[in-house]
Image 1 (cartoon, rainbow, N blue to C red):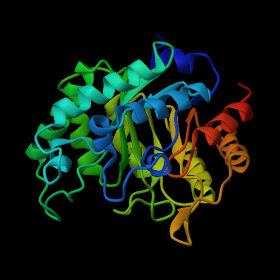
Image 2 (image 1 turned 120 degrees about the vertical axis):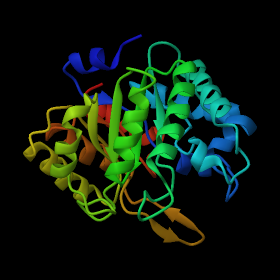
Image 3 (image 1 turned 180 degrees about the horizontal axis):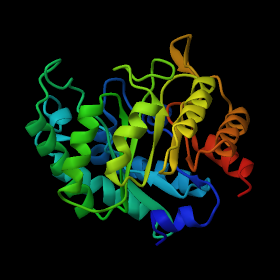
Length: 290
């Protein structure tokens, strides 16, 4: 099994996977059902998506645990099942992709604002992410990914909690839904400085808005003298409502060209977020010379 550092040491760009939720929508998940529910109710479909990304050429896949912290689950049908969810999802991913593809544990924000703006206290945050991380480690993931964060305090607390239970490679990725700023007004330079003491395996961005905005983010991260590898997983463009559904404007080939350019500008790990299918990732693999 290649490690995260092994993949980076090859010198070529590391290819991460694409979207979870929007692909599940195409696979028939009912409106209002959280993706994590499929870990129990449709594990064969969860595994099938992991397998398709691996077959597309991805070096790593993310577990179906983005919303798997105890805090985020507490008001839904999986309340009290965080440990079971995270270990089970890890096992599904591993069985689907085998030992030649890395499995990274996906950890999203709790969905609560941190104090004093909201109810999330430091102690509650530490406990939640420690529980989720330890369950993912028990499930034998190879790395952990904090993704789609927007509040620096929550991300730093999450990293602290994780370091209390494991020394696995840790990625921290923010969502810049205000162009080149997070919802809390943070830019790449501030996040780069804040992450310096954390010994991260990678730092960067996912989700967000347009690929043009993501290109500017890459430039700002590079200009900030980022010392860790740059992680970039953009959406397949800005979604638009067509008829009764949502469409993403970037087809596999245009997505591959634009994300390939981001790799040429300094991104060391690239993949996709909302709207990116296995076909998008297969096109990106070809664009990267796989």
